[in-house]
Image 1 (tube, one colour):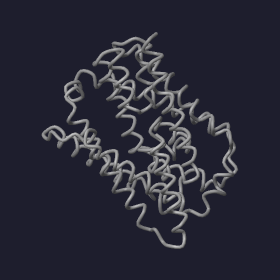
Image 2 (spheres, rainbow, N blue to C red; image 1 turned 90 degrees about the vertical axis):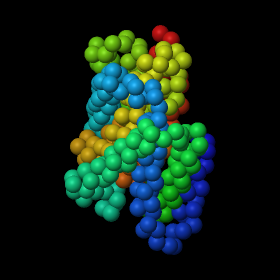
Image 3 (spheres, rainbow, N blue to C red; image 1 turned 135 degrees about the vertical axis):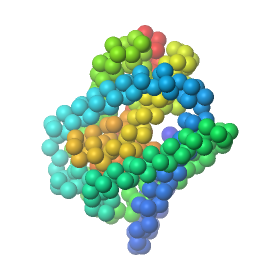
Length: 305
């Protein structure tokens, strides 16, 4: 995590140094890197026999948990958003600059289809190729590149600091709202899956951090529930990448941050920044860091009950 912070900071400093130059290519470069990262994620998922073998039997349980957890997060963050009166202009609270936000539903859908295509292509490659991005550290290097470019975009925006200062400090409650909504949704899902309430809460406590949460659950609860956790949290991350713009329009910018869970300070940060607006990048990073730190403790707590 400290490395990610350092990379983002380097990007911000680089962006500040280059404020005198046009960096119009950065949004397109960030989009291309996101596509590459989703392709590598697909390769990792497709190359995991436990995930592939459990898709038919465990996928339904993972989908139920994912749907309920995300719905709970959206509801809780929407309620928080309704109680907070932001001091920014409406154009700044829901979405970023016009050139960064899709201008139509078709534009958003087209971008989502491209993301799905890259992920699906990665899954196919993973099924037939022994290459593992996690072991080769390629995914990590691509993620660092993405964080650097995001930091450069933030640092290059001369108006960002003033817009961030106008945000309500009560936005710091968003991680708590996300956790409460996720746990409420996971509890509602428990009667519909063949696992206990505490198991459902343990899966929900992954908050999209599929790699770490599935490892803890595998050690404490076994490979089946670990596969459910992996699938559920991968679904949450992919859903955020696909649906953040639509969620921001329908339920407010906090909901677009909330659905990303612990991933909002790295993988999903660029998409959320575009969907919710540049001032919410700071909120997204804070939200992701708090939930990221909580994952090992909450997953272990629920698994040991």
